[in-house]
Image (tube, rainbow, N blue to C red; front, top):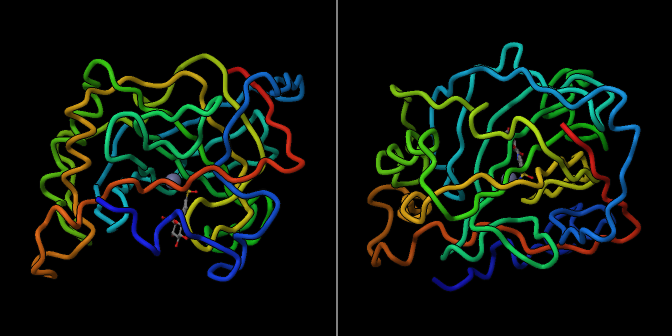
Length: 261
Ligand code: BO1
Ligand code: ZN
């Protein structure tokens, strides 16, 4: 599929208020420039996420998963307050060699899951979008290798949300904790939403170690379509959700720090 003229590769100042800023995301993380930051260890980064996912939605741009958010908190590490999990979603490519939003030393992974959390001191998600520490997003790279049994329960549902705005409830639920590493290092830096309006409100936390998923699992994402059911007469191949990642933006004056779980 060709990259659409209005897609992530073309977000500019003209289109979106925040896109010309100095803390845009994603970025290419250069591992020889990351700094060990002892302040990240004063209180370790921890989360208290629910053990279930409620439903899966085709947004027309990606799949998005909803969880019970009551008490679903993230804190510590680079965060000075409690953040609440709102949703998790994914970005992927047309093949296994690209798809992640963040790059590491110029290299892409096949996909990247984002766990989106908002700072509870701002009272609501939409209010939090207005502040530089409003959101904290956990990024997990997906690398093609062996099948991931937990993610499989989600992959099996993508055929039920083939079209935009379709939504399905989990029977065989996914535990979001099992899609996150239990130990290891993370990169953290100040950035933005990677989709319009690209607000510069995100404390990014990207795990160094990818999780493994199979080629077939990523293929199940690539079956999803950006159109509503019956919404178009053209061949369906033209409307698959592919390459829904934004290319890396300039690091500018920013520092990427390294913390440990
Ligand atoms: S991302 O994690 O930087 N790719 C990202 C990008 C955009 C959003 C969230 C995360 N957008 C927001 C929408 C809100 C919506 C919220 C939660 O996601 O602006 O309208 O409520 O789903
Ligand atoms: Zn995202």
